[in-house]
Structure formats: C-alpha cells, structure tokens
Length: 417
Image (cartoon, rainbow, N blue to C red; front, side, top):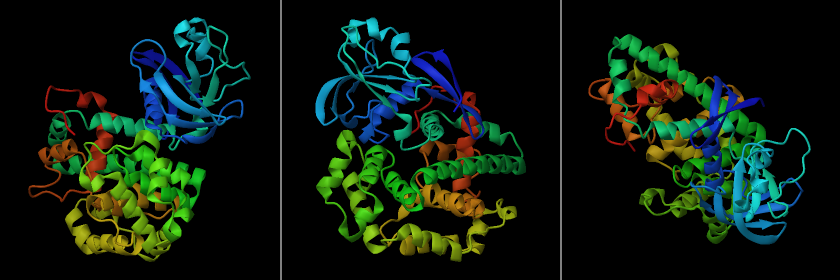
C-alpha cells in the first residue's frame, strides 16, 4: 500500500489509493476507529506477540498530550490502566518527541496504523519505560477506503444539501436523471468492491454474518455488533447460540441505548438476529441459492421509469420473498431495504458476479438521511409526481456530494440528520 502525508488542522492526513483514485484518511479518523472499537478489540496481537484485549478505549483527549486518557487494557492477561497514543507510523513516536516529553510517561499503548517498513526498537517514554505497540491495520473490521467513505457520507448528510438540488434543477430532466444514474453506478461498484475485500478476509458465510449484524447495529451500535460477530461466528448462533449476557459482554462498553429509537435498541436487534438464524440457520447459502434461482437481471434501459420497473419485475413481491425465505420473517420495513441494498446485493454481486445493479438501483432506499430525501424532492427526482424514492437516487446523490464537497459547504441552514 502506497501512501503519502500532508499536515492539516487536527493532525496528519494520509493520501491512499482507492477504487476511483486517491482518498484522504486523517489521523482524527484513525482516532475515531480506536474510540469506536472498529477493529478486533479482543485477541489482537501486539508487535511483541502479547495478546491485547481492549476493556475501555479511554477518554478522547482533543487538547495537548496523549490522544486517549485512562484506557483499560488487558496486555498478556495483565490489566493495565493508562494513556494511549495513536499515529500512522511507529516512527512518529520519536518524530513527535514523545520519547523526550514527560507528558507521555503514562502511555501504556502506542497504536499505529501501518506495519513498520523496517525493524525498529519499541517506543520508550521519557523515563525509559518500554511502551507496548499495536499495528492496527490487520485487525480492522473494514478496509481503510470503506472507513473513509463512511466518514465522508456521515459528514455529508450533516450539511445543507439544497445547493446540489439547485444544480440538478439547472439540467434538463433527461440529463439530471443520467447524471444520478452514472453516479449511482459508481457508488454500486464501490459497494461491491468493499464486499470483495470483506469476502477475501472472511469468506462467504462469515462475510454475510458480519454484514447482517453490522447493519442491524446501524448507526449507533455498528462497532459493538461487529465485535459480537467476530466473537461469535454464525455457526455458534445455530441451535440458540450464546446467551444474552455473553453477547452483550462481547460488545464491550461501546453499546449505545440512550437516544436510540426503541426499534433500534441493540438488545432487540440481537434478539431479531437470533430469531432470524433460528428460522433460517443456513441463511447465507439460502440467499445465494435463492438469488441464483430468482431473476435478478433488470434491463438497465428501463432505469428512467422506476415505478414501471417495480411493477414489471414484481420488486415488491421479490422483497417480501427475501424477507420470508432468507430472513425468516425476522426483519421488515426500512431496515430490510437497508440490509438488501447495503449488504445482501453487493455481497452477492461480489461473490457470484450476478448483474444486480439495476435491481439495486430500483429497490427501496432503506433508512436514507432526511437531508438527502429533501434534496431529491427539491430537485424533482423523487416524490410529488416524479419517481418513487429508490436506492439509486439516494446513492447517486450521495456520490455526487462526495465528488463535489464544495457544493455541500454549510450555508447556515438547518443541520440535517
């Protein structure tokens, strides 16, 4: 992996090569990955071979000194409490002068993203104590590009989006729809690419298992759900699986319940998945076989008439069959659409090469951000006599916003959730 760096407000930014060219990955985003536990928090190996369990990541320190204060860790079976410092490279410890700064004497773990290019001595504090070191990249739940994309989408959906709607309205309807379709196709290829990375790391069954639990955790409990998936593979869920207390423990201290709608309560979502696996224990294989038998090829020439495509190809009935035959009736509503659009179809396309883009494009939009829905209505793309809301329009607009970040500069309007 080639990368170069530049300095920015709030820390370094690495420029990495992605599917559509370079993308930025900031040191602040790396700190968020640590804080949220978006990696194997149990059983990761340190550079000296010791086993690390993260009991608590610590308090994020946005002032001077170590990045995280008061973390609780198990290192080689021994519990330690102290600070954590996060960098891109191991050499940054000395490059930033931490080995000479007493403010870093309480650091118990140095977290670096990339494997050192050459052997180097372990970092030491100003008082001479050796600091344990973790190379994070091999233990991440997702690829760096996927983290960067998700972070960009989250930032985008908190911006005022009317300016892009105005740009689309300046185009004639045919050009407007073609621009969204082309952007949606790029977004689809990116999702399939991310699925390929996950499949290469986990295999088909576990990639499906991780993806399902991750989507059930959207958006506040994604990390603990992934931790549960890593600790308890799909085979352990068959026949009842682990008890509720063990599942909750596997998620660590990252669970969030305050401010979460009752339907998204993580305990309820875990119970849904237990019912799902109980009804269809081999659901990843069932999905693959069922999808191969079902007709997924929707003519792309028809994408300008989403309502007609849905009627002609019976997409509503197809969706209900997925809910019943693949998910065992455990999932419905917008979360089912999110599962199909963000998880099942990209995984299937990556695994089998099936031509699922058009079906994905015309499918339900799931839990789309409100700001994106408003922009699509303002642009006359969906609703009010236009096409019904669909995944292609939502994802196309998101991709256009990611390609044109200046368009989404805050204009002082309402913050969109």
